[in-house]
Length: 480
Image 1 (cartoon, rainbow, N blue to C red):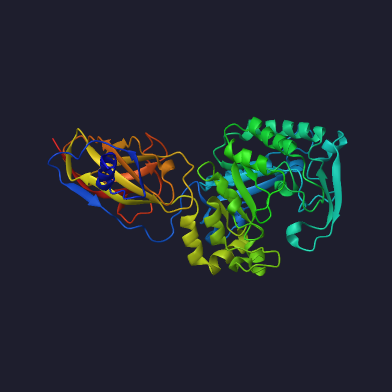
Image 2 (image 1 turned 45 degrees about the vertical axis):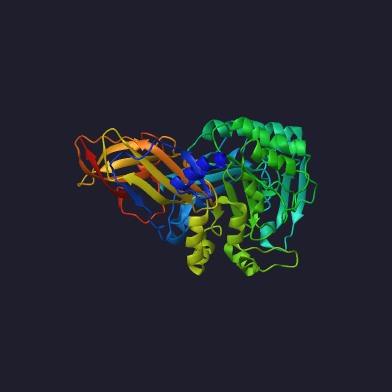
């Protein structure tokens, strides 16, 4: 019993009960200074933040304003043939325009290059460039007459034999050129590995041939790892209602050992989202709907009605299952607009639930201190489904009566990346704020990009006054 007494008393003192965690502990409160305890309410309504949220296909101008204001990420897939029409000659115009268009809006991008695409527009069916096959690479040819639009468009479709050594060597050369130009580009939040399978989704539907061997699939992934050292890679996890084929060990290795972000293409249809949960705390999960919003709704899946194959899941249950950071907003455009207009309350609630959503549940600080510093205790909750994957720091500041920030300090030991959903993260640290003159100030906090960057970066979902984006905790008297 004696061995349990000290931890129990410490937990009571910090107010953790049985759900908390201690990130940093400092000394006792300053002697003679009354402790101010603040327990604010969560902020109501929509709160958008970087590094999370909704995504939409194509350039920003294709999205109505009501959709565009919600989007945090643009999505683009390119056919390899359009980027390298002749060996060693590259056309980056479309990709550059895409990145610049979203970058001007302060939003990021998800891009990938495909080698097979049954929605391709080339009348001869080439997505991998013709010159690759002229060099001796083997190919698969089909004539497609689809009975539903999600399968592709009618006509001739060509895919490479994905384990062919000539194809692999040519694509590895392309990847090196791709990485030389774009690796580490801050506008690219997610770069898809799309070199294997139709649409790069790591399956061979509707080409009707078996998957390549796991070791060859792993070679595709490793090619991307070898080329891109600074950009977050992403890999589609191919499963039908959670049932994997022989490639599952490679999917798992990619996430668990190589920290490649998991994505699922098929949400609300043949996936309930569970495939991306493996990346929780490792890399951001990415969702794409099975079809645009109109198509998902037409099948009854939007409302969770199961078809004869057991397909059909609500978006909300998929998000709870998969813990994603990025979610497809009905493909955007007019379909996305109908998704927003018909489900406004749901969209706003899910906007806050996707990825991270931080709330300051409690703050303890003295009402007065000296320039030698004071103890500050902050208790945070993450009301999203995932941790934050962006680097960031927590800072405290003093503001004067003219709303001027006169002193700033970053909180040592504060680690937002460890604020996990469903847990109370209590961080207690020593703060030293030294304005030029003693007096009464307002104490405020913010989440910034990094130490020394004083611009608020992450909006906090807490109902408190703000000044210049900083969350005001209350008054603090700085004595001589």
